[in-house]
Image 1 (cartoon, helix red, strand yellow):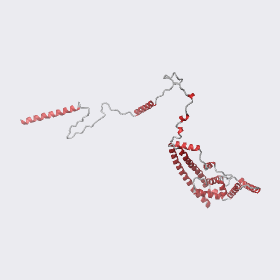
Image 2 (cartoon, helix red, strand yellow):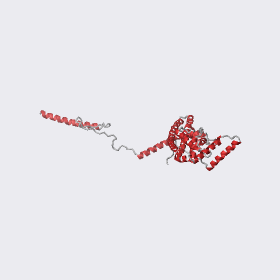
Image 3 (cartoon, one colour):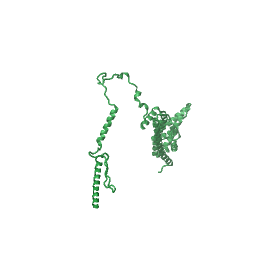
Image 4 (tube, rainbow, N blue to C red):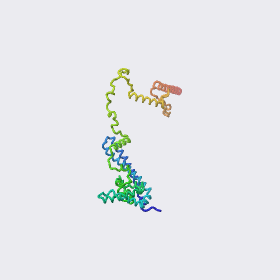
Length: 352
């Protein structure tokens, strides 16, 4: 059997409302992250008064996200039990529930005046009590709570949603206008709004302790040194009492002038140098440096290649003027002398 038209409309509206609530939660969460980053900058700049004011907006955003999460859970419950709700609401139990809510509304709104009215209200109360004795629930315990939450949170909701307004109207058709009016003020006799939702939707500025805790967590998350008194704990503690101060000073030996010898401490500079030296030693052990080989010069020069204009090239190394040039000149001189003698002998032979 296909579902009724009113059930189809209810399910369609809930399927539109739930994703919309999730999208708003993501947007508000992203906005809260940006605001927290701005608050950390204010704290780092020392603008504490401005940060205390603006952190209230962050708190309100977090509370709004929490409210939307709870309403989303109740909407999922209504979506899962939509068929059960319509079977109860448009049946005999729904008629009795609406009658019970109507009697309770009359009891809470009409003033007592005279004996006749008191007798009439007493009879109405007896009828309502008889209805409530049969069953404490209106339709279903979980569904009654979900409907009460929707009615209560509608005019206190942090965002205006068309789908939530339509859901309120549809639930009003099933529970009746009297139940809806009582649930808006949390005055239903057997169904109450959860305390967590009541505290979240309460119109009240955040307390000083909550503001302090938010600022501390934001400063801790972004690495900001706040508050400043945590950095100067020694100044806040003050001086020690005079009875705990020892004015005596020991001698160099530490045996006279004081009961307890002082423990010598190394200055910070020596400690830093020793630490640096130990690190250098460790590095040298791990990767020893390569020194110059024995008997070899660290500088090597490749000799030039012979050419037609310089068939016997020589390399002149700086610092070797005593040996290198003399040997070269001797070699060149001997070569030139032998060539001259050969030329002279040939000339004389030709002349003869």
